Length: 215
Image (cartoon, rainbow, N blue to C red; front, side, top):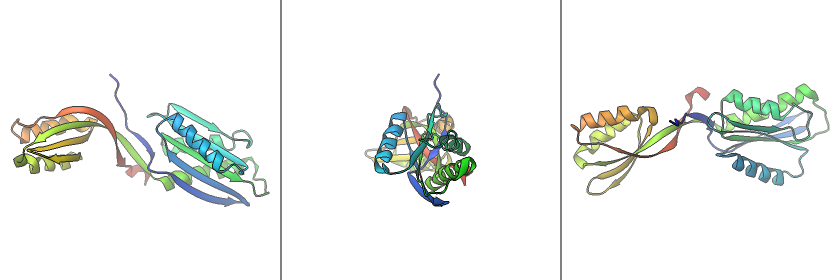
């Protein structure tokens, strides 16, 4: 049985800028859903920053970061892409692309200086983007009589369930429930309705939840 796992990723695109020994570093992070999306975004940035000295990158794709790639883009080996992928792993995020663009300012930073600069630019871009936990959820459909709707909403709040509803002859709603909480919620609704309310699992999706660990 294929079971999905939760994972952490960035909330939204971000951009930070650092000036280090006269060099300008632009660190940018993007949430991506596939390697293709990461490469398309990278190509767009390379076109935008065509005049930069370097456009170094790192990306991780997959619930467990199964696909990970990085590039120094002409910087000395191991001084840019590797510290950037290490920053992504250190933050525990995946499905993310980070690009650090450098405009050389005329002062050499040395190997250690480059590692620190690229690692810092990547880490600050991640923080600026914010982090969320993407949890696997079941989509469950219910037809809830109006007389039981208040009870149903109360149970949904207790179990941290997101609801969307259409008000017809009864309330037709879809509940998004973290997969590991689905059985408990279904049991509670069944019990509170004296066995008259049952749901139908129609699919699965990922629900973004605030990642308190990243604060």
